[in-house]
Length: 238
Image (cartoon, rainbow, N blue to C red; front, side, top):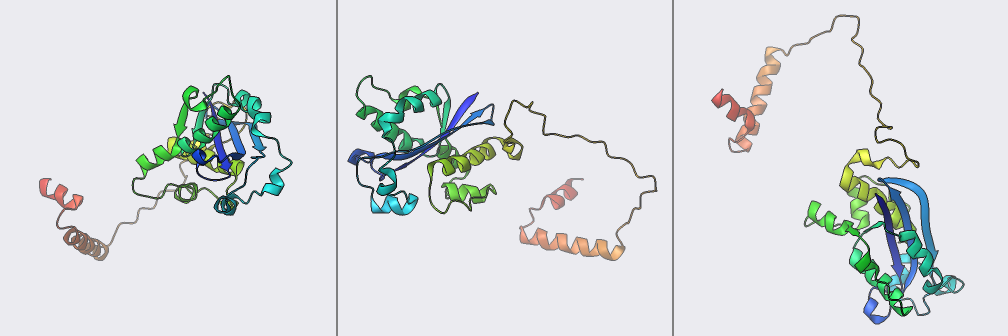
């Protein structure tokens, strides 16, 4: 299956107020493995950037002045997306901005939100971790992903982090293998046979004092749980 991890940065939060995309970052995955293909563009928005947004991403109007407009990269973006499933954190936000950019181009109308398959990692994170923070930084901490480079938001950097988060949430640690190429699924797994030592195994048994101390600790834990510890329940029925 082909997937594209996608993220954007914008001039502000409200698409209905005419805010625009100023950065798009995409990373291609095939069969949950990174192919090495990316799509990354800065865009000239032809409007002012909100001060609050500037504090988040640090992308200035002066820097964007020499960058292409969305119209200049729209076909290239659609070709990169193709028929891939889009993996986006808070998909409604990014897709609303992308659809608005395409709407400005006029006919033929293209709505990515209506035509693409979308996997929203924020929705999944809320199911897995209800009542907790589920932003990228919080998820990186939860899954042990290094986000130290993320001093400010950036579309391609955030897509890189989201890639690791997505693989961790949907496949566990075994899915974090990001080698390029079509390696077989078992390629990273090495199975070895443990050799039995030639000398006799030494068995150390607990002393009576140690056994008594262990029982006293079990009694403490049993009282603290209100008599619901599993070991005591099993003892009563054995």
